[in-house]
Length: 159
Image (cartoon, rainbow, N blue to C red; front, side):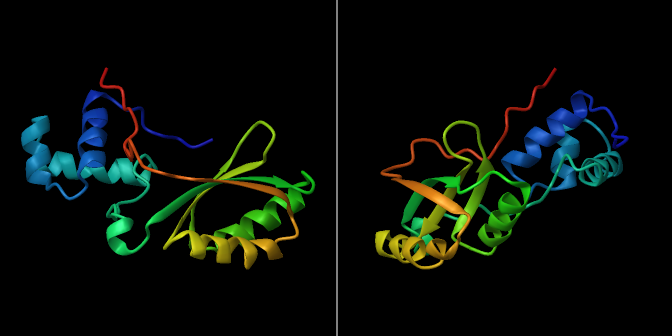
């Protein structure tokens, strides 16, 4: 088991500030939190090293970047063996259009979030690359008509 440092109120505040805008400076964080920039730097490094902060990235506007179609796809595998699941996950990881893959409960094994240029591109993906995956027993797709909420932040407790 990992030996992680227990988070305190300051750590939680830092995580909240950083997940809302990862480009803020240590000077800004220092001002918001009330600690020196050196202390902020050390805390952020610890949060990164302990894995609380997994990555920093730019959130891209898909439609503006030419990716106007989003789909959720439920996948049921032909069998539930570890080998079959591992093989499926390895192959799915190679498909750039699959931006999320969740192992779920219920009638399906996995829920995928797929982003493509348009419906035609999605059809090409399903009929092409995904149809080659012998691990897939059934596939059910849903087209996203519009996005009402698209938050990338998690609700971090402040107390």
